[in-house]
Length: 150
Image (cartoon, rainbow, N blue to C red; front, side, top):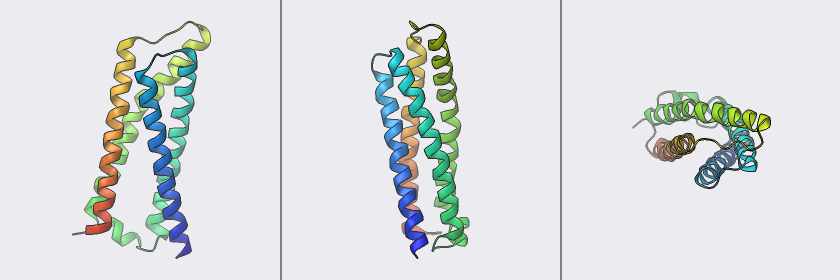
């Protein structure tokens, strides 16, 4: 029972960390992009990736070592919807990650570099859509907990 409590707590804390980093990325992409902001975006995105990876690992530990047992999760359509959204968020996050790394590399070679406004707007839209999908994940988690497998 203690294992389940610890895994659930860590899972929730990682979700909050992931959301905080995505919201911060979204806010930074709406302001003036300077070299310092580019560096910050790259660091935030790295933290976001680490949080996402740890979140997946802890989530899998909950499936196999949590109190509900893997059968609850494997036969739960809300869990599958939640996991599907998680995968979609992960796939969507690839483009901003690559772009932020490219911007950071270009900034190192050219300290006056400022990304194109169109690219910034595109990355901003992707990050905001990721946040919408994270909100859907939270709704699916609530549905999963309340309705189980129907």
